[in-house]
Length: 80
Length: 130
Image (cartoon, rainbow over the protein chains, first blue to last red):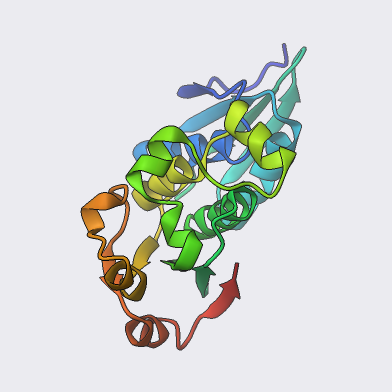
């Protein structure tokens, strides 16, 4: 497992497809305070590729996309 | 950011799914998004059809979406309304013609409007017809 800053919230969206993981992440970002780190787990590769695009457009910080055995962890810091 | 309007006239699940995903994600990125459901596109929101998942499909892809663990458009749109700037309008003309009431549709619409009201809302929007 890759080490990085500890997440404040983990969303397990494995088994769901686009746009499920993204919509769950967006909901969590709305709910959390600025500065919090949120990670979403997705077994859907297109979500793993598209969520960083959303993060960039929305102006939050992408800490990283980490490939695990059969899913991705997309880690995001809410910046505004 | 901009303003996006989608005229949803198709009742085919594949098209509604695509429209709902694009609309929902756009609404979370600072865009104002309006969906006008009319014709068969409005019928896809009927309570009885939603409960039975009895949507028309263009083919096997749509049938597969119903069977697979894919977020269906109703749920995607509801989530988008919670976190984004998305409004849904039901076409009044179709409801008058079929003598239907808004409570025969799933509880997702912001209002029932006619074409003139819709055109007024989308004067400054990009409009996509599906």
